[in-house]
Length: 411
Image 1 (cartoon, rainbow, N blue to C red):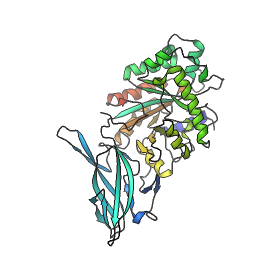
Image 2 (cartoon, one colour):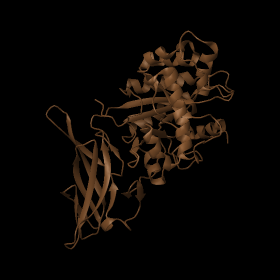
Image 3 (cartoon, rainbow, N blue to C red):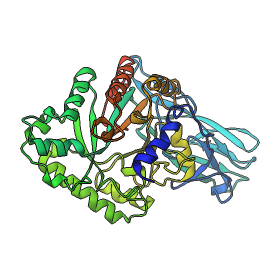
Image 4 (cartoon, one colour):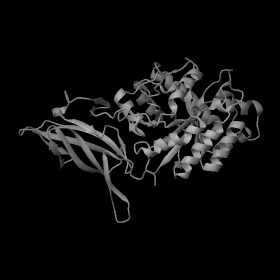
């Protein structure tokens, strides 16, 4: 299936994307793998909530129960309810707090005080040495409502600038419109680049004469790796990490050559959202800190980086989840603008904002080709869709950010 066919197929699912929900999972974590039963777990301990890699903040509901503050309203600790199962006769403690028991279940309210927190559950039975289970969770102490915007599949605008030799980058149709939206809403724009287009143009063909202008606008406009080229589909699904990293480095070098270090960010969306899990750590090793996706289970194109099913289901309903082994944060895309009709922009965003699990961070995505009148699937109201989405989040106090450090304390 070609990308344009995939996007057309997926469009029928997008209107209800924010409304569809997977059942939440319960499980203990071994590394990053979620186990759904207690067999083989240390001392029979199973931590159900929160989950390994969970990203928590005060505006969440379960498992968050409150936030301790000083006299000036400054957050001191996040109060979290830790639940799970352990042998019925065991004395259970969670970070030293004695847990309440009912049969095999346990619950304890603890306080998180660090950005990265280890939760340790111990169970002592019949005077035997206590067994334990551990997970890590994150606290966004100073988090505020934020949104990010990125454009996939970009290279047409660079080809246009290179061929027409504009005096300014923003004489280009695409970048000119993007600057207008930035000036209107303050939106930060991340452009995910192909190295080459179908007609042979490559990033190596783009001149460095605009480098100072790129640098002057780097506070809101950044360039990132997406893939070597548009086709074949899902190019890194089965590719060894070395191939992915080589293509990543090639795009990185060219961006820094013609736009400067200031305009570069590592990738946040790989073409088709497919890489092998053994590429997570190598990717993190070249500076990748966040990856966004759809995390759909019932789709031929889940855009989920081949993450395991329990974590994929969790991400479908939550803003973030950290892969503890690599340190990469996975982020759920709330809306694909080229797949969402103009009259569905606001209802889809309203649904995302109504859910405390998805309201803190709004992740917006679209694709470059649909902006261009020469493209056979050109969308005439594409710019209007962006305007409506940016207006909605701006009016509700959402701050524009780049996603590459989504867990940074903000405030």
